[in-house]
Image (cartoon, rainbow, N blue to C red):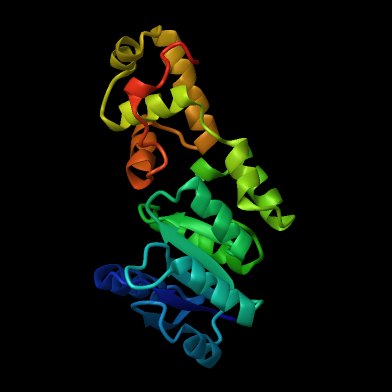
Length: 230
């Protein structure tokens, strides 16, 4: 049986050792080496010639996107899977454009984790469920066609009202509380929440809140935005 050769880049030692131990138990997988950061990655890739590189999106001492670009520019056939808690829409676009073959959430089940590695090895492009809707389709098409990031950014640009709703969700406000603060009906707030979920390819309010806390894009000032704008 031909084994999938895997190189793991994860700067959290506990996660790195845990993932490595899990993969080593699989009869069709071989962890050729593990790395705490992206330094000397080209030397290691050239030495071990992995089929798959598992990469932590949030390396503390290294730009993960630059690591992807470095690997793909020198080793075109190597497939890269990025691991993160909840990747932002802009991250998805940039990493897909740079050549990443898949994303995995760090709270993914063991079965899905292993399935993703095997699927990417076989040539599939795999993302977590909350990114597999129409937004991801557009991201992939734009990335493949070489269109600039502003194209996707403009296509999912939030209105000022939606930015207000995002900020209030991040503050823990309910739909009823948001309606009162913005002088809207609860139905209108629900409609805005639905549109936000669609634009960000998310499924829950909790994910909206996490997205807002991870991004500086929605730091709007509610008092300075017209309450008449929908």
